[in-house]
Image (tube, rainbow, N blue to C red; front, side):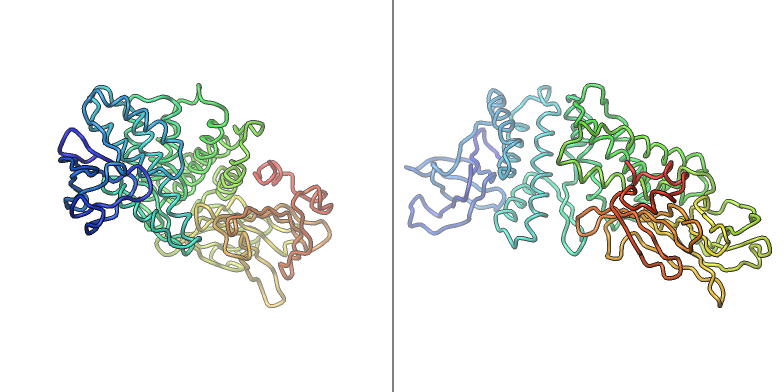
Length: 476
């Protein structure tokens, strides 16, 4: 709590007002919000003479509208008790921040550990979520004022635009202190989860910055000792690790100097973390997070297989693909067969996405081929090469027809005796998670039938490729 004396006051709730003199009829100077701190300089009747350091203005406030607090060391336990109470009280974030600041000012240095910073970070993160969530409901003056109160105590928020709205996130300084100071395993685990949120990764980061950040996120999560944590929290850490390592697999694949082994290591780690989830201990509120993690892992699943982009592969006897470097950062895919090599391909198409060469699946009759291409760490498309009377063409099949937040679509098998293929799609669209197993007409790429389970679509159940079933995360 900002103060230059041994006592200070904080507006406990709602709004208070400072006035020019100790009378109700006096002119109002400023509206105070919960968490605002004032230096107490004296008293006159029912009023306290105060100085507002945030607004740099003196005035008077009714003593009943503020709560005086001593900032002497002996008052620290009482302040910490209030912080503990407010930590789990939604809507009191700015007040909690003020009490945490008061405790940090009053407590001896040797008494400060990770607990108060855990509470401070929780207040800040919850306030950021509250401010982000209020946008759809219209402007909220109180939230805006509470953010200003928090900023006065040095709590920093970062903002960026996502999905046509402003995303507000806490910068995580208090949580970093939790990891550095003595703290319980529970507090450190919660701090790691707060610091590694997917939705708080700024879209404005450069590729180099993004790669450094995802490596740091993986390191933070791996430092947490999970042996004494409850299963619910272990599940949340595994889900976060799965998503982070899936992103790291894609990031490593973009850097050929790291090698195939480093890419496969990250992808396998993502799959393993997803497999460690105890579904019986999965909280109902974590169902969406589980789907989110599975989609992220599914998008980068081919990173665990051999055949990275730009690796030389020989043209097979039948239909296949070969890749060569294009423009800087670009990969060119060449459709080849026994009579057409890389220099004389059936068709060539270039992309800045990651081409998973090992995913190429040719139709038994040589009239089509599917290929997995991943432009983003959370987005994987399926390229479909088809033979038309006029020659070969290629179509890009996205995870969803709308604009999903994340998703993947993958080849699941050819239907014997027909020019039809099976596909599995999983995506997050408008905040909702959707999964479909489809029968696709190869000539038009229209979905003829679909179901939410493979067993509910007889042709899918009968014709699904064993290799796909063994590899996919869509069946879990």
